[in-house]
Length: 272
Image (cartoon, rainbow, N blue to C red; front, side, top):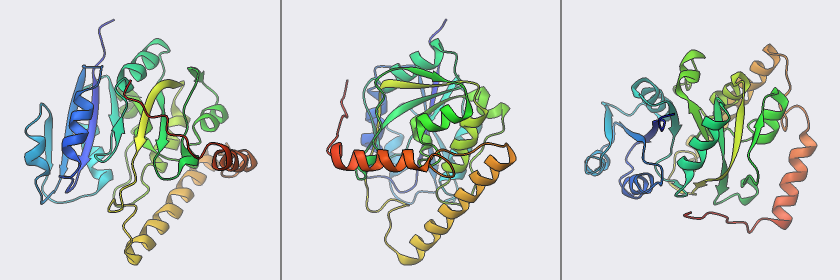
């Protein structure tokens, strides 16, 4: 089988401080069959100018439309076999795409799930020791903690799967990952968790979620409640429970305590 093409979608809005490091990180991957699409979401800084110095495709939004709209534009413009959504201020270990592509192809899964290293909340760090395939709804949701962590950037999706299920991000909302990631895992016939693929989620004070403005934070909290309602309604419609949310809450709490007490110093990120 030919080496599959992976489309990497990178939305950017006034990200001139991060875009160079982000693109160099992706371009230095051991896996080279990459289509990199930078969605310039109405930036007023030099983000697009910097991106143009690299071998990437740039799609411009005339005005800032938000992360969801940018990711949806990425889906519309993608030509790869698989698609990955990356945030401009984060990092991947060097073998991220090699490990993810190998796992998703050899298991014929719809979705591959990477490890996460959460720079701020270390208890949210999750690294896999063994490659495993999950097919039942409960197992897929339990293995990934998707009901608590929507993090779309930890998944590699088969592009046809996204299009066939008409999966899109809800425009105009923050915490938009959750209402995309959970339904996608539900619809997937198979998912595979991947050791050796590590996504470093970096803490940036000025990021959309972390901005300290009170009105902004109130909106983020309301959108988080909205996303929770969306996935609970989805679960009720499809007759399943969400581990960590409305079933097996104890399992999530015990893990959180264990990670905080015994593993809160975990770093794990490597350039291998």
